[in-house]
Image (cartoon, rainbow, N blue to C red; front, side):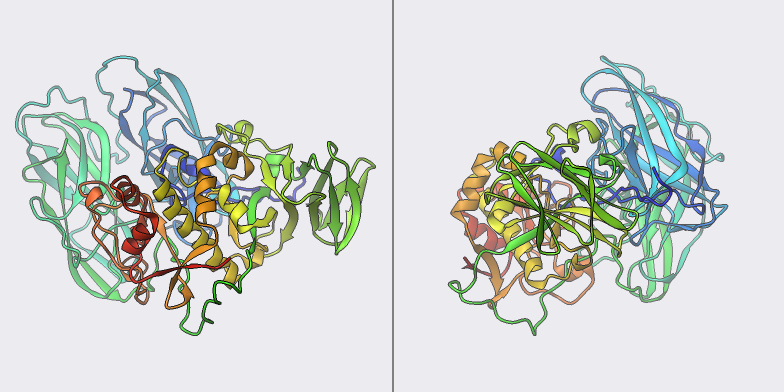
Length: 629
């Protein structure tokens, strides 16, 4: 690899959602686009929760790792270049230990601290969930600067033995040297009682809302029962948290209430340090953050504790998940249903980097033209292929007669519309440990470098309805009315960004295939024929509000209610994105941002006989469905 070549890591998720049938775009990860190592980035592994772990099938275990920043750049947990861990060896593989709390099956954790200056130590914490198949596994992870680079020295491995039968739990070494090592709990019988020993601060002072800081508190197990795993929950024990109560939830929390969850054991008489992140409310003022301990869903007596919190200045309304843009009041009214043709959508499907040796090789049985600057420069027969790349500041292609330079980006236009391209040197089964290659795409492909991110995208250009057939947002067997509701929301989301044309304008496409909505192309279309039926039965229908296209966020599952737009993304209210109750989700954990349509709730409504249009009108208040083409 040449020194000036850039390497990847982006796009969240986010093809990430194979482990949940209705979990799609939210879970966001992706594959961070990574450049070559810069001299300013370096890490030194200082501490882990162990190099060998024994687990039972299905068991959850908290794992923490600490790195010293031995480079010259400050690390951050927010912004476009935050620090996180990705699966490695091979990179972007789907881990068998993925937990629902991960950002995606390839990205388990982000930096705990808000920033770590050179010379400081940063921690990353995540949950391992053991697979059902016994055996010995080696899990390897690598530290990364999102959208930029892999960090030298940021790699580590852990051997995990998943037992085939019952075994005594194995405790993990504590991170804090001040905490005595915990030992396996001998029994779950007896009393649950805690005694507070010491805490890291009497109060937390923030200069601005939205800031985060680490808090540590040590408890002694003062009861007669062992703690076979425990959770730190927000709020006083026995009291519900009201919707109006201030939230101290940090991005690292497992849910709105669970600040810390671990499977570690603490025997009677033993002590443990609880280490978690607290986020300041957005508004300035004085607050009280309350927490307590639970073991196996039972409150630990004496574990309630309060932290006085002061916020000097209002926050900038920052949020780890950036809100989709809201249609402005000055937007032009949606044209009548007979005036709009089907849009042609541009989808970023692959960052071209070392995963494909910095180039793409394309084939199409119908044959195709290579076009640059509006001119056809080569014609490729069916069964033949072309290789193309952008390197050293220039494009080139090879149609079998050696490399030819090009002064502009390269388009690959099939001789027969709707025919299928295959990227023959890209196979997700090989590089990402996926179940399918998913390297085939309908219609036009384009190789386009962009200076804003200094990376090259392979872009798929195709009609909107063909795009929807390749979405991987739900399973083939889910209820048809649920599929139609989901497809209509997805069509509206894509159409909204097609209309605006601003979200990814710097990278020359409308939506990407990972973070925006999970798109896997022709292979997914072949595997989900019922989804194609849903696309056809809702063709051209979008969600509107007062004759304007309505942005339609959706997420995996609610906890019994959805949220108002402004309660999550701290901006002006959006009239059609109001919180509603979701009876089918009551008692469940929130998965996703909570705004718009709960996929779990929508599926339940479909199973109870509701039609797709009624489902959409329930979750998006006051909307109208309009057929645009």
